[in-house]
Every structure is written in structure tokens, then in C-alpha cells.
Image (tube, rainbow over all chains, first blue to last red; front, side):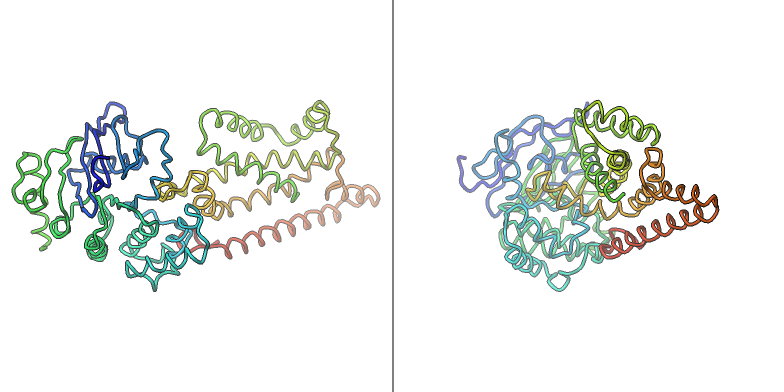
Amino acid sequence: MPNENVVLKVENIYKNYGNNEVLKGVSFEVNSGEIKIICGPSGSGKSTLLRCLNLLTRPDKGHVWLEAEEVTNPTTNINKVRQKIGFVFQEFNLFNHLTALRNVSIGLEVVKGMKKNEARQIALRELRRVGLEEHAHKYPAELSGGQKQRVAIARALAMNPVIMFYDEPTSALDPQLIGEVLDVMKKLAKEKLTSLVVTHEMGFAQSVADEIMFIADGKILERGPPRELFWNPKHEMAKLFFKRIAELYRREGQ
Amino acid sequence: MGGSLAIGFIIGLPIAIGQVYGRKGIKVPLDAYVWFFRSVPLLVLLFLFYWGVFPTLGFKLDALACSIVVLGLRTGAYQSQIFRGAIMSVGEGQLTAAGALGMSKLNGIYHIVLPQALRISLPGWSNEYAIILKDSAICFALGVLEILTRTRYVVMATHEPLLPYFFAGVLFIALTYGGTKIIHIVYDKTRIPGLVGRM
């Protein structure tokens, strides 16, 4: 790695599903402490891109490095890499048979081989961090959507990741529940937790992001500081996209 | 009977896991196993294994042991499909999330998928208990001293068919009721809010 500050380096990622080219050469870097946003129309390959970066989906071409390690190298132990990437899903994907506490601690026990009690302490600390300590004993079905997503964030944080991936973390939530999740994400962003976020929450983007990358048609069409991209996009597709989002915000009175 | 259920569980669960997560080379023989044991009538299986397969392979099994094994092999095929449905209903996201934490697929299946799938499969599984209990009656064909064989001895000795067969029926009802009741209790004790409903 030329620059020690770079946490994630993505080089020329390609991914096809049959004849459908989802990603056509995506490259970018995320530096330590940076918050980068990925946005774009649905079906533009945003989620696929995130999944290609920790090989939940294997890219057809291209390279990914996490710190000094090449993720896409076939000899790399991918389970070791994934421990260092906190992944937050749109659909939460909490483990349905485990309490909030056990959802957070099970990775520590099974993956990191921690003793039950030590894992429990860390899990409680992370649940406190997302404001859910008093709900530790509840099962996922007993939590609201916003609470579920905060547990999912705590679960990812417990592994002490070097970077967080958020895949549309608020898209499955009712509008009144989005705020509590964004608040947690903002707090983590202010703690300089390096993050890559797929989201259309432009309020969030403008308050914490260092850069927005606009993806359409499998490529990064435009990138820049949030304000610049949001208010003054150059590319036609980006213009249309951000105009629509602005209209949506105005209608919701945000 | 309990032995058959246990054999069926030990065979059925790995078959289900292999069918859901295995490569094609694993799936094809598993599918064939399930297809065979679900297609051939039990009586044919019993004769086939007792007179044919086991002697040919050099196993010296008495009628009782043979019955337990054959019932076990057969219920294994049926149980595998109960577990397979349960595993598939758990949803891909669970294993994906486990993988994203750095869990190996095997660990994810063991710690995340199976604890959910086994709970989901219990109501269906209680069927297997009831079925195999009653299927055991067919083992009298091999001369096994099960309930029906013993009842026939009584009938032959007393020339009075009604009461002995009636009580044999009642005994099967009692055993089925008791067993499924226990399964219900296990189900309720291990129930997790939101994962499975009340039984």
C-alpha cells in the first residue's frame, strides 16, 4: 500500500449477472476516519458493490484491499477480512433466535473465541453505545425496526471493525424510526469511525460525509463534496436524481 | 422405536443440510436416497433388507435390530424433508449476516441456522413420531415381538379378537398422545417470541 492512511482501496470492480452488467469498473479509496456515501438510482449496483467488497458476492474482475491485505487475493482468508468490516444490512438480518445481547456477543464467541462473560461485557458496552442497554434481553421480534437496526450496528461494532459498511440502513424503516438510526450513525461518524454508506439520506450526507459518489449504470458517474454534488451536479443523470431527492425532501418538509 | 427415530434424526439432518447447501455432487446421491426410501413400501423394505441386503453385506441382524434400522433409514428420508423445509424457511439473510461477521459457513449453519430450523421443524417432526410408532406394527411381519405380535398371541390363545385388538389400539393411542404431548412441551419450552407461533 502506498499510503498508510488508506483503509479501503477498490480498483476496477466488474460484476455481471448473466448478460446484465451490474458493475463496470468501479474504483475509489476510503481514508482512515472518512465517511463516504454511495448513492444512485435503484438497480445501479450499489448493494452489489458493497457485497463485492467483502466477497459476499465475488466480483468478476478487479481488486480490493483492506489496509495492507488484498481481499480479492484467492489465498486471503476471507473470514478474517470480514471480521474487520462491520456490515449493516437494509433488512437488519438480526439472528431471530437470539436476544439483542446474544446477537451482539455471538460473533465474539464463535469467531473471536472469546469467553462468554467477556463477550457479554463487550456486547453490553456496544448496546449502551447505541442506546439499547435496557433492551438487551429482548428478542428481535420484540424490538421496533429502528431498535433492530441499532442492535445490528452494535453487533457490527462489537467486532471492532476498521471500517463500517451500511447498505441502505434506513430504507426498510418507517419515517419516524429513521431518525434514531441516523443519530447513531452520526455519532459514530463524529467519532471518526471510517464508513462507507449506501444511502439516499442527504441530510445525513451533508452533515457528516466527506464525499458522495453518484453511481448509475454500474459506474461512478460523479463524485465530490456533499454540498457541491447535491446542489450543483454536472452529469445529466445526477442532476435528475438529486432534483428528485430534493423534491422528496421538500414534500416531507425536511 | 426411539432407536429408529434417533437413527432417522442422525441421517435426516445431515441429508437436509447437504440438500440445501451442498454442491451438485453431494445433492444427487442424497436426492436418490430420499427418493428411494420414500417410494418403496415399508413391507418391501423390511423384506428386502432382512432377507436381502443385510445378509448379502454380511450383517447378522436379528428381526428386531433389522426393523429398527430399516424404520430408521426410512424415517431419515422423511425427516430430512421436514428439516429441509425448516432450513429453507430460515432465510438466506441469516447466513449472510453470520458470514459478514466472519463466521465460516459451517459455524453459521450450526450456531445460527439450525437452532432456528430445529424449532420450526418440531411440529412436523411430531408427525414422524406418530407415524413411525404405528409403522412399527408392520414389523410383526418379520416376527418381531412388538405390540401387534403380542396381541395376536393373546387372540390365538383366547379365541377372543375384539378386546385384545381394541386394547392394542388404545395402547397405540396412548403412546401417540403421550409422545406428541412431550414434543409439544419441548416446543413451548424452547419457543422464541416471533420465531415460531404457539402450538
